[in-house]
Image (cartoon, rainbow, N blue to C red; front, side, top):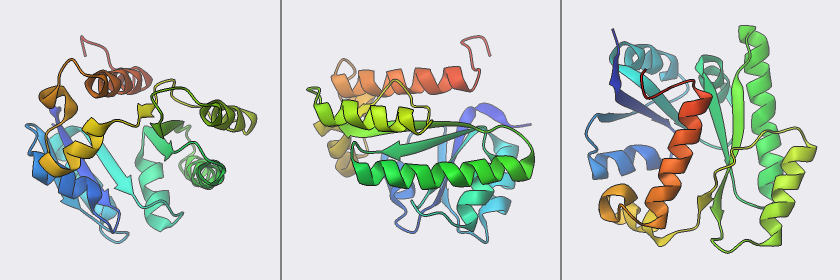
Length: 190
């Protein structure tokens, strides 16, 4: 029986950024491993035995590993920066999610999450939101803002809620986590 307090992160991106970040930070209750297109399904099956939440990080190209991961997912988050290029790439990723949903014959919840958005609102962010809406891509209302704390974390491994619990980055992560938890149907009771 999986432990709902544990998180398994499977990094199937050749850059292994997620894996390295988790290993550096050594967060309690979070385990990281590396997989590729050939080992991904087995890694997910094993992780499912141990953890209540599995996070899979993939490279940003449509490939077989992405199709596998989407087919197993309850929620797919598509990160995008506020630019036309990211809108186009997000559309490609969304198409893979739709293929996976068709193959598995079930709906797969998908959301775009804007990242590296400026703290001070700019028209390009609103324009990007409009582009996603026009293309029918649902978005998280929470954006990951461009904050120094996120960059600092890549060096220290210390997450913003430990480094500066009252800071804007910590609040940003909490808001994002709350929104994702609600999409997954998680409540404080369960």
